[in-house]
Image 1 (cartoon, one colour):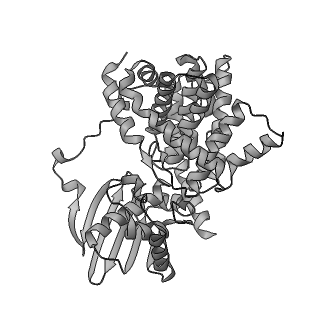
Image 2: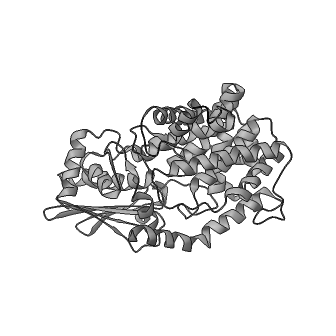
Image 3: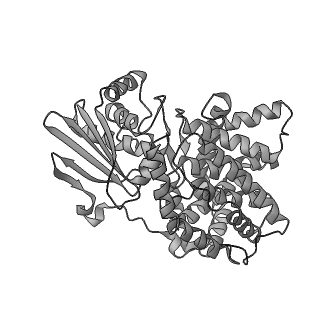
Length: 428
């Protein structure tokens, strides 16, 4: 048992599983704008936004919380006018209708421009606010909240690379020495007091699910399941309930509900996908609090472990990889051991690998529900001793090798898929 990895696991979960209000790509733009606005200290005349192709893809069609609108221009405008620069991924939590009205005026007057930056960073957002002769530019890169540069009138006043090493948080990657079994042992054996903070994922994402089931958000995937249960066309069984409650949370999030999601690896949908299927199974078997907490930790940490092998943003749908974390938590809740969990993850990789990410939007809730249903199917197969074998496709005999094969696909051939997806999106 590799207990020396446990502190690193705790740190990475606390860093990667955080509340986020709205889709994290436009929110990253809003945060850049809010930080620039604090330094500018006056209402900007003009706002310029430059983002990486991947961020453009994930910001074009998604709802921005509290605005009733989609896209990066409104995110930049409302972030500049009313964003909280100290709130991280909840930067828009205090905006008002008046703030939104003023932001819409900036858009109507064509004072906000958005373009694609020629950068190698997969995640990159630079927002420049102009007021008279002054211009403040704030750049976030590599993670959704990491400010790497601040410029005033083309003079660099902050650069992350120039900071003393002692001032930088030292993020050690605990997965360099770890395997999936280490994740399982930590989640199931670590002291409860060390991991019970993950319970907030249940609290936030379940509240978001309830919001999606009561409001008319997005494509109403969750409510569609509920309506057809009420009509007698679907039974309210475990699989339907998993799809209903999981997709409802994504419905609300992707259409701009003013409730935060607990994210995972920089994505609210990944946080939802890693949380809600586990919560539904825990409710179904009437699990106690400790069992739910351990299942949630197993799900979220396994999702982070799988995602750590991949680029931050890619053409591979993140909800699928997060659901591979959920399958670990669900399989354990239903009585499975590590061998069953390994089989379940391999079953999922043999099933839904290759679902593309064509940007953040309301239809993401459909992919979330598809991934959730694939997860419970994979878990039930594994518990019956059925596994996609190492002779089939990219699945290997070892779960860690299978995860690496999945990630090689995402980081390799699917990078060209990403380029093609963006070309299609911007040409419509």
